[in-house]
Length: 378
Image (cartoon, rainbow, N blue to C red):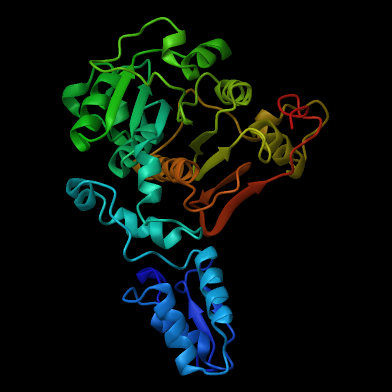
């Protein structure tokens, strides 16, 4: 059994397994007591045949097939690891990720050959990040620290004094310098096992985004800041820019056309949210936005623009807290799509309202058959 999922017996004799975390734990009725014997025997010191033998000896009325099926069920539910599996990474990586891999193992409810499977998928991943400010900076830190294989950063701006209250990749000496240069240097210093590249570039339209997500050997060469962007297609787009206003719509259309999963996040005052989208699975960004607009009752008068209920400002009020939360949620969504841990059903927006910490935000809507972006796609 996974050490994080260690079982215990309840007062009424049932077996609880998978920890007390909602969404992970399960309770198994055990009137004859043999399930408890089974999970006790699966302590990593015995092979499958030995476990079955131990259970059958303790419960003579039980068949070996019953015990084997129960073991298979526990494996399928994600509660079991192979304690004898080889460790497929270097000693350096074992030490670096020795705290993160157990958390991935804890949240992973799928059968795996090794607790390092998710980390290996992350090591092979190629990620395009647009925007390295507040949200993007915190997300980039998390992705690089977690061991994403290759992160390519895109941002057109220079560092300003007003950035430093919430953008973690920059310091006062960086003021006046391109953000992407400072960001790449900081990220490379965080984890030299990750390839970090970048380019100073502005996204001005949908075609700019389409060019960015294509393999770089199909577009004009760019200055990659002493590195090279991935020559294979990206596995994920991480969108942390909020300008121009239509950039999410462009990203949605471009990623649908490319079949590329993507995530986004941001903050509006105390409301912090992130979204995850996979073409062909669940609602796209435009479906979700239309569903949310239909759900809200703004009580607007005839002809009033919905923007009056949530006016835009020249800059978005933010602190290191809101930027950090949105960047953390963004990285979580990215890691979940890249590794499958935890399982995240796409077509969702989630987050929190800092005015009501106990009231989580969760937006989900069915895919709209008449969606102008994805309605005719299957």
